[in-house]
Image 1 (cartoon, rainbow, N blue to C red):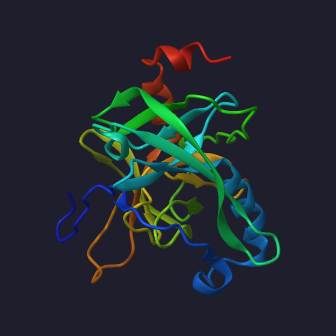
Image 2 (cartoon, rainbow, N blue to C red):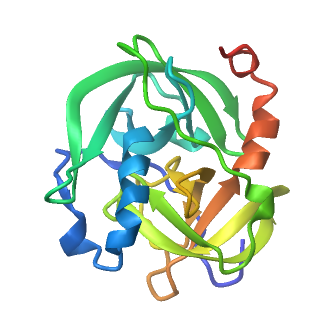
Length: 230
């Protein structure tokens, strides 16, 4: 933990009715040029809902393998997932009505990552394109989607470090409780990591902590379902 910073994990916020988020009004920093990135990002992001709490995840395979943060699904008794769309005209993040059950198939507590599987995907799902996080540099712009009160975010890499011995990326990006497990994208719309933690001290600059996708992929090799994916 960095001195003077609260870097507690971003668990799901208390669950309530999911309202449409007016991104144009509430996130004026997002430019017109960035909307294609966010439109794609929203298609492959899901809400991971445990009833009392929720986080986010990203779709990795057409048959419903979803990457999320392990602390989001820890000790989960029931998991439902729901997709969203970014309305072309209003630019609002709108939940789709259909919810689907899912279950945990892999957990890595040290890295704080997990894979869940949708029980009945109901067809081929849109899949995230994975980027190369080994080529990222300080000041690289990144973008994020999640299920917190700031579901669309953008910022810049400020440093690289480690947390509990695992590589992580520090990003000057706003996030809040509920963003854990949400995908983080580069300017090409490719996933370079997932959001795990946030600087919760409002007196300090907004900071998000991201596990790089290259680290995730290496650790997923321990998961049989991931190795055997079609």
